[in-house]
Length: 200
Image (cartoon, rainbow, N blue to C red; front, side, top):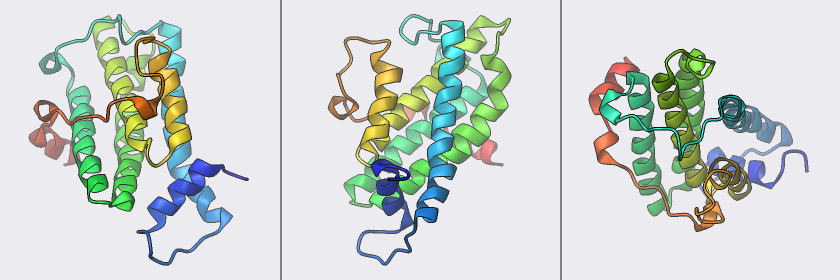
């Protein structure tokens, strides 16, 4: 009743594998809620706030070719597609805990603490429209793909994110995240050398 069904479900996934003993308290769910849930929500809120101010439309604003985009954009998309590959493999192996923990690490460490923090100024009124559009496209793709990846694990949050990020701009999209195609990793976008350099 305090944090909702999705937060409770997410805690049970990330606390440990099914069948293993788990510590449980409302406080533990609250810690998870603050560390992962609010981080994802704040990242989503950041995107929506500035996208609305700048009237960004992912279907209308021109997409810059991948090779011409800044290194940070290419890096987050590389991490995103590596995430799709890993989460898919883990779920197909019935490792929901490993998938949920990997998603948590991506959202908290890569997307919020690294990508958004280092790109904030690119989302403010920028003199370089192409650079700003590149940042918007990268963050939009990261958020919509994350919504699809968390859908089996946090169905209500995933649905809300999907409706606001996808259905609001694409009336032809599937009417629910749970009817949308599962994301597929694009190996061309995965750049191991860039990922190693960024990690260093």
